[in-house]
Image (spheres, rainbow, N blue to C red):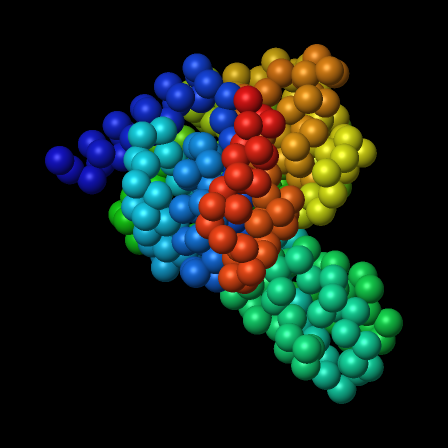
Length: 321
């Protein structure tokens, strides 16, 4: 079977699943290039019932995710999405610590959700997801967040050839020309399901809707996912307040009646689905990243068994359905 035909068949399966089912999407982290962690997360959450896995635009990370699926032994209704971004997207940032300014207080070490900072205040860039929590607690102004945008024209062809089910574009910027240029490139390179990750940090509601309508004008109806990112990389707590912005962003999109599939994201947790339902907000599924990784952190670092972690992961996945 040709690669093109296989891609089209896989995309057809994903669209069919989105039309008929609620989905749980595990966000491994657009900036998370820790192959071992991604492999373990995908295996664990696949066993727990997760349908879609979102990974960095890195060929080796994609292969690690596929190894995780293979270890789980489940291929039916399991799909991999690769996230790409542009300059200014916080998901593509990495922390850089100026050791000459650093006071050695270790607040950054304590607050990092990815354990990407050592006790000597050295950053492991493969683990860093750009959440900037370390920068916010630094007492010496020693931490700078540097952007590492992906060269899409170079990276994507080999990723597409390897085989993915969806590409997600993080359009978190106020540069409309940059958005349009990269969106056109994605559409020219990939003929399958595309996802647009948006939040309201840099745009008014009106500007956000205008952008989405422009982007969707070149797409067939219901071949696009909108990931309504309420508060990116903020999901450390399991309460209604943390997930409120994700539901509010999805409500804005619902009022526009866009021909898309909507995933709630950004600060999402086990309360997200319940809150959205109570608010009358329709959604195709929930994408959970920070919180999903946090609750199995002990497993990822070898302090918890697979079986214990699986029970925890299943409870979270079940909360969406």
